[in-house]
Image (cartoon, rainbow, N blue to C red; front, side, top):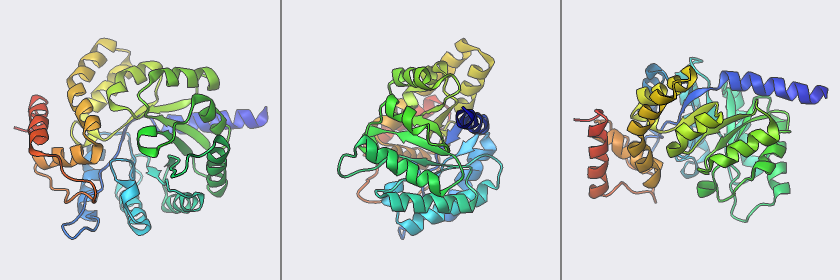
Length: 308
C-alpha cells in the first residue's frame, strides 16, 4: 500500500508539472548536413516566449531515429541549456537497444532534463515481457520520470492499455503519450489506472477529444506555427468553456490534419520555410514536400493569418 501511495504521489507531482502545450521542436540542419544549433536555440526561444508549457526535443518532428548518438546528445544539450529552466523539458531517448536507450536517458538526466520519453523501437516484434524489461531496466538507471510513448505508426509496436497500465507500475514510469488516434484507449487507461493517470495526447487531430477525455496536455509540433491557437484551446478547456474550445479547435484542424497526413518533419519544415525560416535540408531519405502540397499548405496558413 505504501509503495502504491508513493507512486501516486510521484505521478501526481509530475503531472502537475507537465501540463498544457508540450512543443516538439524540429531539428534544423545546416547546408553541410550538421545540426544548426543556432536556429534550434531560436526555435526553442520562440516557443517558450509564445507561452508553451514544456519543450520536448528529439521526438518524431526532431527526426530522432535519423540522428547519430553524438547529434542526439548535442540537440538535448542545446535545448536544455536554451530553455534554462523556464519550462519543463521532456527529452526523447528511444533507441533500438535497451543499452542505448538507458545511455541516452542517463545523459538527459545529467543535463538536467525534467523527464524522458521512450517509444519502444523494434526490428523484430517485441513481446510484452521484452517491452516491460526494456522500460524497467532504463527506469532503474535514472531517477527522473519516464513517459511511455505509444505510436505504432512510427515505432512499429502497439502498446495496449493493459500493458501500459503494467508499465505504470514501474516506480518512475509516470506518464503516457498516446498517439494511436483512438480516444477510447484513453478512457480505458483511466478505467485501469484511476482518474489521476497522467496521459497526454499525441494525435494532433484528436486534441479536443483527448482534452475532454482528461488529457493533461497536448504534445504537438503545431506549436512551431500556431502556438497561440494551441494555447487558446488548452486555456478554454481549463476554463470549462467547451464552446470556445470547439471554435479554436475547428480553426486549427485543417493544419493539424495536414501535418499528420504528410509527415511532421516535412510539413513543419515547409511551413517554417513559408514563414521565411530556413531549417535546412531534411535528413535523407526524407525529402521536401512537392510543390502542389506546399501550395496547399500555403492556403491553410493564409487562412490562419500566419503567412500573407
